[in-house]
Amino acid sequence: MSVLSLSSNSPLPYVQQQLIRYGDSIFLIFGVSGCCLNILLLSRRQFQTSSCCTYFQALSVIALIHITIALGLYLYTLDNIDPLGISIICKLRFYIVQSTAMMYRWCLTIACFDRYALSSADVRLRKFANVKIARRVVVAIILIWLVLTLHIPIFYNTINHICIIYNNIFASLYHSAFLTLTGCIIPISCMAICTLLIHRNLTLKRQRRQQNAPKAKENEKLQSRRDQQVLIMLLVQMIFYSITVIPLMTMYFYNAITIYLSKTLARIIIERFALFITEMINFLFPVCSFYLYTMASHMFRVELKAMLYSFLKLQWLKKNISIRPIDYEMKVKPKPTAHAIEFNSNKLERITEVSQERKNLSPDIIQ
Image 1: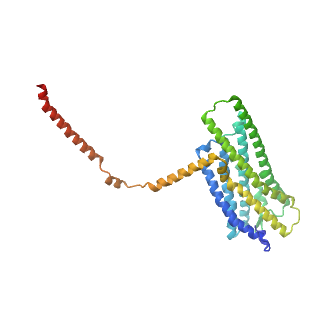
Image 2: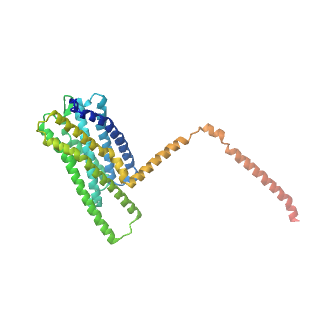
């Protein structure tokens, strides 16, 4: 964004500024609210039995951190001094944004492998699709990418208030190749392979079920439907992720192979603007994850309605139920003891009268 401001004749700096002001604002609002709803919904009991949903929940938490820092800082720089001019903020910003991006990408990748393991006929492999194991894997993913992205704060520096990898061709090549391989080629390849294997395993399961035709228990059918819904959510995410990440990684690859070329200022401005557009497209994945779940999964929509209904019901109860002091209740309500005493005295009088009548009648009866 700083490079674009060098040219006053090009309309691209103004276009980029407006895209940040309005586009990133919309992304931030819908992204933060969507991630928060994801976290709340995936914390419900119905999703806690699925190890794949553990990865989805971790993905939502990491994506929330990612878009808050990345988009929030973009919006802050519109009307304030760019804090990236400070070296430590420059290094931290790119380190956090890139590491969190890798974390949620690989949470999605491992979620694909988790579904493959669950669909496998191998008992030992199916043990991987376990909630406890999923939580450990999430912790491992976070630690691994905190370490593997440590080169970013080392390579990035502030030069003339611009946070870039400056005058280091090896670092630029390594960084571009690293992001392209670990952020695009390897994850998408793993997801595609897992999808093919899942399809094969499900086909074999269907054939065995048709041959044996057992009467499945109701809870097994319910769990099977939930697994199918989770698989649909996963496939939709995988396709959308591939669509949003490929343009950005193409720009990284292009920058890597043209790093030795001498470029005019106009070309640099166009390339920077193209990189900015691909970054905005890449933000669509963490921003839209909640809305993808809602559109793809009937179970997710049902749970969303149930959660909203419970929330509205609770708010209505809070609004309509008033708490009165104890003194007020004592004044309004009659004393139950008085009624009891009055009832008992009337009953006693009636019993006495009946006894007296019996005494009066008894001599006649004897006679």
